[in-house]
Length: 391
Picture: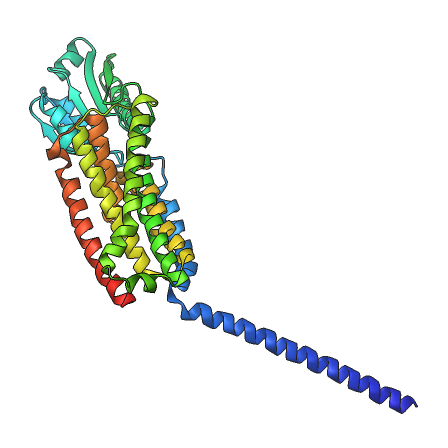
């Protein structure tokens, strides 16, 4: 009897262990299958492994409150020892880079509009003579205050450098002297932050509505299997795509009008420049954004993938690398190069010039030209890839 009991117990243990072994093998088989699915989908691998790298690089290097390599101009009618030393100290610091010297004070207004200058340093006449004989001399710091935080920081940096030179001069000559910096803020003397973020928010809204929503709308047709039904209709594929893009174009125009009205009448941000030019470049940017959305729709087959690519390729770069929040010139050189391929950078720059600075067509001609090139290139590539993928 004991022998039979032992045999039955042994058989039961064998069956249990065998069942566990089978379940374990099945479990690992499912795990292997899932790995194969992930490794087979290159886009998923790019999202899983590439997104952390992109995020740490962008957040680590693009987000900084420091101001470096700000381009400045110098007007020095005195051109003496003291003015040259102060200019050399400003240029030698990590905060400033002298872009040019102007010989006429009237040039300063054009320099700010055309040269993307952050600050102008204006020395008084007979600077060194006044410093030696009267103990006082004046310097005017004229800053572009469309970005109030940057204007405050660069004027503080310049004042500190000038103050250090004054202390050294007093220690050398044993004579009290005073260099008085006079700060003047252009375009935004009230230092309102709305002057800075309204153009950026406008670019972000148009990009999200046009690019992200267009890509998701087209991919949704693919995902549901209705795109093929649309393509067999008498209408050509290009008109089907345009028909899906027109509603988002119209909504973007409404949002453009809404944001501009709220900016002017609620936030008190003026439109100093031409409203016509502002409208034209906004419509051009909307067209570029629609082309980006069409391109994304040709690369993916699911709405989730379109959403993830839009976040990686649109939202983060627009927020961090377009100059919307953080000045591009403060970033590492490689990120500055990368920012040049972001359409929102050129649009935000042009909108700031038109709305806040009141520049003309010549000042934004480069921005318009680059956006035109992007529009033609993106729409050409998108339409070709769309036909190849759906035919």
